[in-house]
Length: 113
Image 1 (cartoon, helix red, strand yellow):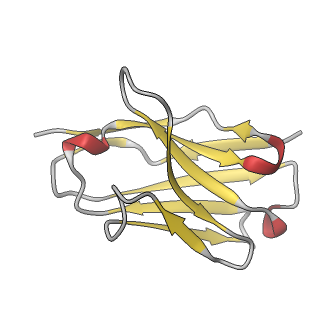
Image 2 (cartoon, rainbow, N blue to C red):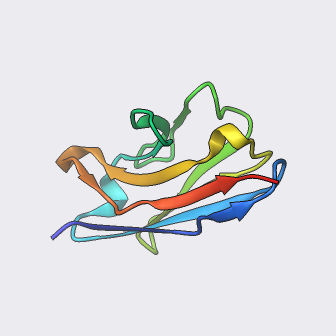
């Protein structure tokens, strides 16, 4: 079955960087559109970034220029490089496979001094 496992979250100071990973299995990852979402405490889950099977990317305005989404089809993996992190980026980050509405368990990112 479809499995998505996020990793790489943690505590980082403002201005710092983190790289999230999403390990995918149970479907043809190389031909699949993928997304990152996040959910901050007390807020709704929101779109962060997406990447097509040919590498076309799109970002939420709030992260554009700071975050970079990428994928490695040979490893069935998706990444989110997050730079210049701000306290407002604090959230649980989720990997999403939209075609089957599947979600990972999430990884916590906390930006605080």
